[in-house]
Each structure stands twice: as C-alpha cells, then as structure tokens.
Amino acid sequence: MEGGGAYGGGKAGGAFDPITFVQRPHVILRAVCWLFAVIVFGCISSQGWRYDKVTKRQQCLYNDDTNACNYGVGISVIAFLASMAFLAGEYLFEQMSSVKTRKHFVMVDLGFSAFWSFLYFVGFCYLTNAWGKSVTPPDGVGVSNVRAAIAFCFFAMFGWAGSAFLAYQRFRQGVDAAFATNYEADSNMQASYPSYPGATDTMEQQYQEPPFSGGTNQRELSLIFTDGDRINTS
Image (cartoon, rainbow, N blue to C red; front, side):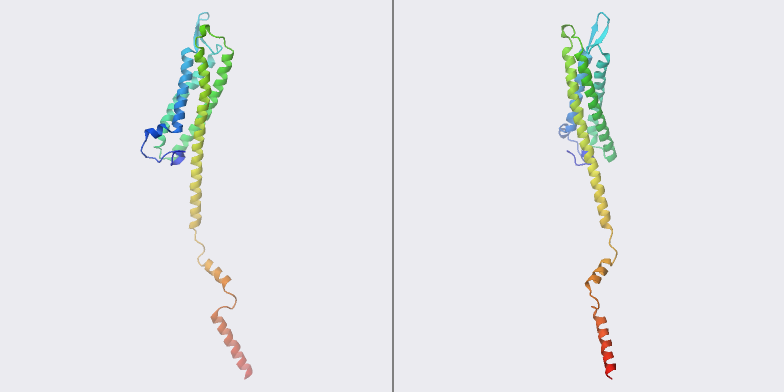
C-alpha cells in the first residue's frame, strides 16, 4: 500500500499532492467505474428504447422488457453517484485524523464495492439473456448501444470487484497494524514488571555456596572441637 498512516493512508495533515493522488490505484479504479457507469446508462437512455407506432408507447429493446432497461439505468446511475462520492472520500481520506473514521470509510467501501460488483454481474446476465430473445429493431437502430451497455456491464463488474479487493487490502493492513501495536504494548507492559527484590541474588547464593562454606561458622566449629580435645586430655 502507498501510505504510511492508518489503513494505508498518509499521515493526517500532510501536504496534498495532486499528481500522487491521481496515480493512486483507488482513484484510478473509481474513475474507471465512473466512466463505465456513464457509458451504460447513456447507451440505454439514448437508444435503448424505441417508439412503437402500433402500441403507441416506448418499448425497451431488451425483448420489450421494461425492467431490463430500468435495471441497467438504475444501477449505473447509483454507481455514477457512488463513484463521485468515493472519489471525494479518497481526497478526504488523507485528512481523516481519526482511525475509527478511516476504518468506517474502508468498511463501507468494501461492502458497497463488493455488492455493486455482484449487481453488475446480475445485470450482465439479465441484459444478455433479454437481448438474446429480442427481435432486431428496424434498420438496426440502437443495436450498437444495447450491445455496448452489455459489454460495459461486464467491465464494470470487474472494476467494482477490483475496488473491493483494494478496500480489503486496506482493511487487512489496518487490522494488522492495530494487532502489532497491541502486541508491542503488551510486551512492553510485561517487561516493565520487575522481579521480586533480592530473589535472584538469594537463589544464586543458595546454589553457589556449598554447606558449611562460611568462614565464620567454620572457625567457630574448629574452636569448639579444639576446646573439647583439651578438656578430654586434662
């Protein structure tokens, strides 16, 4: 990860470098997801519908399935807004001094990106199946747009999956850093407790000094035995 602060970000309050910001993988993927969202809902909104003169109403080119067109536009509009929100969050991420705030942002990023990748997968399957059952419109009007929407739903699925993966890496980095900090704190706390005063010296003396090795005790015993011998002799 590129940052040296909490959850892969830089130190809070650091100078903002626009070139470094634009080159960050998170920002690049967000911009790509934003572009894919614009293409999908733009293609469907512009030529994903045609006016039927017989029924006198707008018909969706995806097998006349209104839900298919609405689904593609709906998830893409939300993805468009979410991409801009996450880009703003990436800009503010470096300014977040609270570790909890960064953690919440990373968790929201991870959950939303993974969920939207799944929704784009569903959209790709849904639109592909509906288009396979559709009748080609007269003069092929809107065919290229409909196919482009399907293709970019597929690309967007991987774009959001990549964002989820980067968010997961950030989350793991934050958890590992917090665990390492707590482990170091516990180690320092254990090392700060001193041993029992004099316990080590006492044990060393007990193991190092043999029985009756004291000079004073040995001299007293010698005097006692000498006096006893003198008494017996007399």
